[in-house]
Length: 161
Image (tube, rainbow, N blue to C red; front, side, top):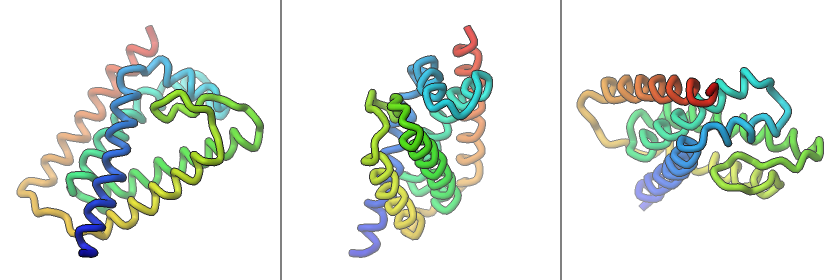
């Protein structure tokens, strides 16, 4: 029973990042402007982040939900959540009222911090779930990393146009 709940937690956390990553992949210029709205980084850094974050979210979420290297991909998701939570808190403290860039058109709000804490809890629980055994897991993970680089490179060029 507990094992099933941990797998469900892993799939929910991973699925969330698949959804948000895929939503951002198709609108990298808009995501760039949302990053700029936080007033934390400059245009060049925002361009890099807008190109890199969506494919990382998508691939890490997909691998985490599927149970591929859950400890590693779970750590990636936790790092993303920590960075996003710090950015949201910074925006709230400075009263910016900017678009969160969370795959929708919501403004930053304290509820997003609560959501991130819940997602982090699901990710931590999912990291301790029993992962299915895959032959060639390292090859799949390496291909996923190459996919992230390829998509990010394409997005980076598209944002610059």
